[in-house]
Image 1 (cartoon, rainbow, N blue to C red):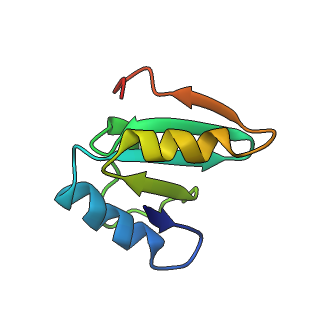
Image 2 (image 1 turned 45 degrees about the vertical axis):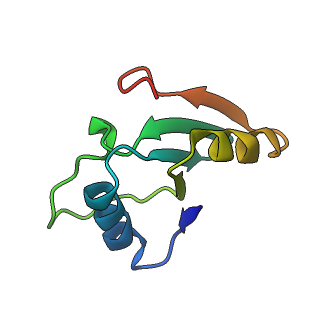
Length: 86
């Protein structure tokens, strides 16, 4: 599992992950909500030079790995993206 957190290199690393692994899965973490996406989801389509508000993410080639992690998080609501339908 890859972890993209608040460090200053996370957005660049995440952009690379998306390019190299577009069919992988990404769990976006915003407060108490955990939303599963396919890495190529349009929700992550930001321009190369634009500053982004980066929410922590976990990514994996295995959807089940992220779902298992999400189930272990107390007080978090797990959902799936309605656009990419992972």
